Image (cartoon, rainbow, N blue to C red; front, side):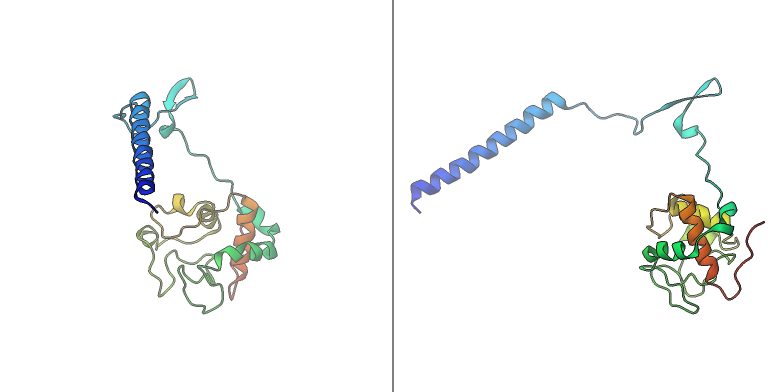
Length: 181
């Protein structure tokens, strides 16, 4: 390549850079809005004749799973549990993985599986029990149920899917917990 061709290539690269910088500068001047002093958008919600912000509005309630458990499909729960096997084992005496072994988890103490290091939030719940509705809430949204949990699972949105998984978990026990009345 000749020196003249190298100069042409260099000039083209420099010209493109100058054009890009100029376009960026002009765009910044035209569209720069400045920074807001408040880092949130207030959404007005009408309720009971008064206006309140969305942050004070009540969170939607979770549909209970207990009425669905008697007719829940264990086979469907087993299929749904395939996504859990990357982090959990379900066998009696199975090893902990990224998450604890889930054998006999229904009606067991939260953060009670020996040999597993739970996140602080779940450790603080260690005196409580994994009853059907707490499992329902956890499976719906682990991050909402136990903020700061290490579990990265987004949750199951359908209550029937949660009922099927809970029925599957209930079946993985030496003596399955009684169904709610």
